[in-house]
Length: 502
Ligand SMILES: CC(=O)SCCNC(=O)CCNC(=O)[C@H](O)C(C)(C)COP(=O)(O)OP(=O)(O)OC[C@H]1O[C@@H](n2cnc3c(N)ncnc32)[C@H](O)[C@@H]1OP(=O)(O)O
Ligand SMILES: CC(C)C(=O)C(=O)O
Ligand SMILES: [Mg+2]
Image (tube, rainbow, N blue to C red; front, side, top):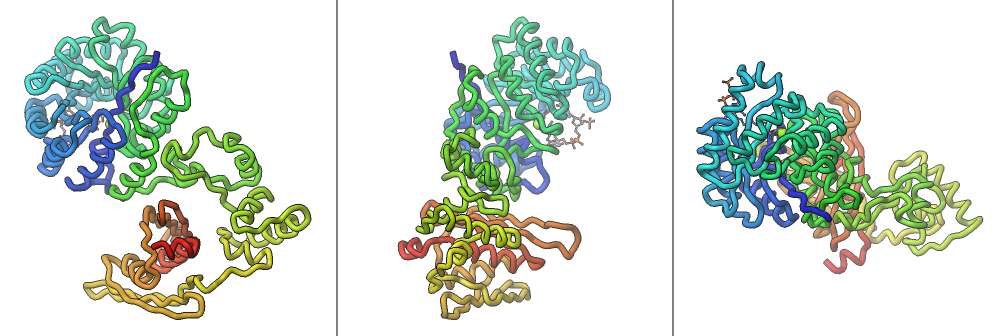
């Protein structure tokens, strides 16, 4: 029978430890509420002793969120635990997460202590935490590199002391899946009171094995997984929630279920990415921009014949509208025909072959083939009365940043000025003043392609209009110009009738 797997999200604690990802209290509340809506069971909201700001965040999240358990981290130090308990005062269900390093490295070189002292400190910390809350989780830091017998001993003792959850972190991301699974199995088999606590996994991704290790842990008896959205976290990151949840959903042989509302995954991923200024890599499993994009002919043909030929997950299951067929010089006729059909152009046989050959020549010289290109290839011309061309941009920065943009729409010329928090913001606002597209800019990624100050910037944008995504791409040495071009590129992909409904 399938058992419940508890989803413990540590985006706001381990995830937030990443340089540049720090959030203010209001932003943390927004993320916590999104995690609650997603169906997360436990939210690790912060490490209250670490700063007044983190204390306040744990306190405010405790007030703002009601369903999930709110967890606060501490060291095996009384003051840390007291402050964690104080921060959790308003939580409907509060948990203190305390613990200590258990590997020979940590015991000898970090804590400069002895194994016996570490057990005593772990036990004392759990007992002390139990004075404040019923729910106490113990972490055996660096358990992945610990000695199995010592790990079993300390886990047995902290459960006796009142730990309700025992967390077995692979803190340094060292383990192989078999090794990590064996650690969990050894606890199940050798710790006499193990049934009195839930075993948790907490895996890091230093060797790219965090998800595999977590799944192995679950297969060997762990019933809580500690994860982050988009896999963010110290160094190479933590186990990514979306990967574990979808692996479990995809493999019925793993005897657990989660309460995650999977169609909310994509939106939550983008919210975290945006607030934490942490782009999602395009090829990231489940939530990367290319996770459901097919760009080579054989795959495109396969997907168009039957989606499951090349997709193990229906994109809608994770909140992605649909898979995309991207036209490139590696595309075949099936993909080209698919795009032409969408434009109302029905070509078969010889006619399709001739257009395909012309398409390949164009695709070899151009990265992104748009509607206008396709119509030109088949000798039709788009109604250009609504086609937007970027004529000129300029901006000044004298304390305040102001931009001026000139556009040509059909045969008419327009210009507008706007101020903004930066030149890109000011330029996009000027374009919006003219076009009034009423779109949501959901994703905006600028990447440097080479190195140095003469870099080419590559801009990718995802706009949402009437619940549908429209993508814009551009590359240029000038970041501001590339951003404006990508915005206009995406706007040109929105059908005119969508503007009419605005
Ligand atoms: C694996 C993890 O992700 S653990 C969580 C990591 N997150 C953070 O560290 C963010 C929050 N941390 C902080 O704000 C600070 O490090 C604080 C407030 C916790 C401590 O600050 P400081 O008192 O200045 O200590 P500092 O950071 O320099 O060193 C850590 C101390 O804690 C000790 N320590 C580390 N882990 C533990 C533990 N689990 N239990 C008890 N003591 C511990 C170290 O041995 C060291 O003590 P020492 O100075 O006596 O050698
Ligand atoms: C504090 C613990 C749970 C941790 O983050 C780790 O060991 O990686
Ligand atoms: Mg960690």
